[in-house]
Length: 310
Image (cartoon, rainbow, N blue to C red; front, side):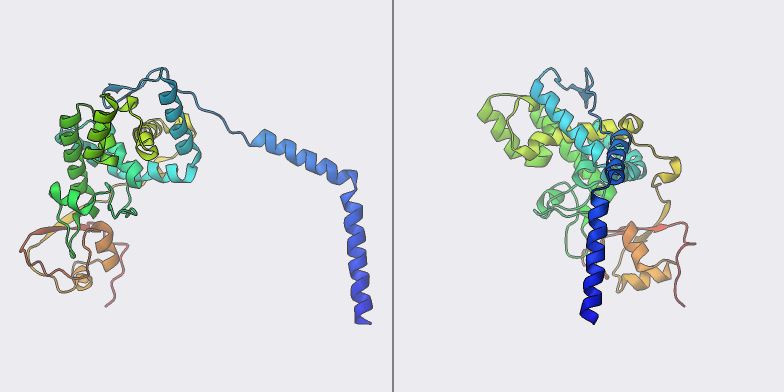
């Protein structure tokens, strides 16, 4: 009896599906849906500017290859909307301070966007173990004055690593004679750029045949710079309240050892998570400080959002 009832339900369901599939009403609904889709969902190509400069150097847009590579990066960053929105929000927090550092080191402000394409202004680690906002390898970070050891890794210090990045770029510019080649060397190393310039007998980034990553690199910086500076022209609309703001902090100097950073944090009215948020370069939950260095620990001035257990 149960089998017969189940069979009847299946038969009725199949019959109804057949009637619906063949109905003119279903066809009309599909065509209306498609028409609405075509009307509401539109993707546009982008206009390439007639002239463009980067770090005071002309971008040769009359070269078809250069024009197409710039077009690619503008399209990728325009239509990867979630990623670009987050970059715009973080840029609001960090760009003013980074631009000031680059000015102090004699590096054009345009180069600060290199940090955005490297990490999105996040403390990430690459497959090659480059770390931080500015993606330094340990050896290169130490060469430019960053402390890198088991307890402290200043590659994760946004401000100190920004200054090291500016110093690297200034050094590369002095060697190669252009900021675009300096930026390319940030990606493939000074030795790699030097080798390709000698091998190909050219002196300009835009004339070099490079690996795919470095060939895209400068164009990615240019594209992100253009979008960050003119977001509305690329379809990005953010209110002031949407932006991530710089968070005011005060500095507490630590000259000795710290047995427990979580305990230290509680003593200063914050929790360990907040301590690490503002000081991601602290890599352990203690500090032996055998070199007797003095470290500047940032603590938010507004602690009202923090709950500390009794």
